[in-house]
Amino acid sequence: DLSLRLYSLYAEAEYCNGCFQEVGHITGVVIKRAKSFENKLRVYAILIKSLAAQNRLQDAMQIGFNVLTTLGVQCPSSPSDKSDVMRDIMEIKMTLTKTTYDEILNYREMKDDDTITAMKFLQLLTVFAYFGKQQYYAILHIKMVQLTLCHGVCKESCFAMASFSFFLCQLDGQFDDFKASDHIGHLSVVLLERCKAEEYRGYVHALYYGATKCWNMHIKLSLEKLLQGYQVGMQTGNIETAMFNAYCFLVNSFICGRNLVELERELESFGKTMMDYKQMGAHGLVCNIKRLVSNLLVSNDRPSLLEGQKSEQKYLLERAMKENDTMLICKIYIFGIIEAYIFGEYELAADMIRKKEEVEGQMSRPCLYYGLTDFYDGLAFLAMARKTNDMKWMSGASKAISKLERHVQYGKDNCEHKLLLLQAESNSLLGAFEDVFRKYKLSIAFAEKNGFIHEQAIANERLGD
Image 1 (cartoon, rainbow, N blue to C red):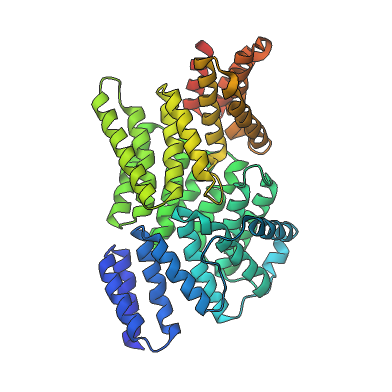
Image 2 (cartoon, helix red, strand yellow):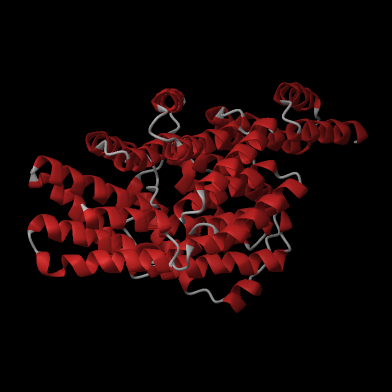
């Protein structure tokens, strides 16, 4: 009725304005007074988004699981057995890699109202699981794809395909099938256009163009698509979509070596927008990058500022650990490793790698960043071998080199110069000098050719050392 619609619209408006206390009050009134479960669904979705924006992810997830159960969709509220998850992933992968673009265009449409509603809630929960509840991430988007294959396609199916594509290409050392990931990601784009699902365009841009596609195209080519995704999200009031694209844009900007002064301004601007809309999960991730960029811009005669930044990192890490936010913890370590290596704190870098690997054991997938993490892990291990004359560090370096060798098969633009530098460093330490100089020079040349000037600088420094 009119009263229900007005309350629901008011709750949505207050969510967009970041007035989460008022959202909680309004949704509570509707949930208490609504005559049917169907009348509560809209405010349940708003409440879940509001809780997630405040980083109350467990509360958001539990409400979502309760709604799904009522809708008749059984989705375990505790992590499934890993072998069961891997079996489901393989079955879905085999099915989707055989699915042509014409077949997905003509796939039957989802008709059951409860299943369509469940897909909407699964989509919400999948996004929030990625940011802070990784133990649920795999089972949620697997369930979305399974419902699509069983019941037909709906608007949310394009998100499901894009999310599955993203997940598949990050399963380091398990599938390494970037061709399949790219095909499934393209299915999501085809579905996006078929279903005219503009509300999910931002997610498809972030997951496919901003992530999956970056394994076989230059990272900088993702930036325009990510900005488009941000703009669409803001224009449609889909704030969490906008912030997801903004975060991916900032990360990819850093990885591909954009000017740090410009990037710092953008980090400040996007960070302020996230604060204005009280999107605290995304803001925490951006603060982590901003701290590193600020440190890299600080000159050596300002040590007090560096110390202040370290205190900020400690606070951010303590908060993430308190909230059991494994994604943020892992990314704090990743960017901390980069900083520690650049500033010559190799023991600290090695310790952070150990801690990062422990956290990754609790996650559904590691954060690979198109070879970036393997690159700096390898550099840190090689630096420790050089500093201590202890060859035990070469095992970790060899592992990083092996991973980059696989990555180069799919994305030379982003990874070839990284691999060549690690190979040059490794050969130098092992006394295989005949090919060392050539590999250093090739690393420098390829980094320059593809615009990775920051990594070109590292290669130059290592050659001259």
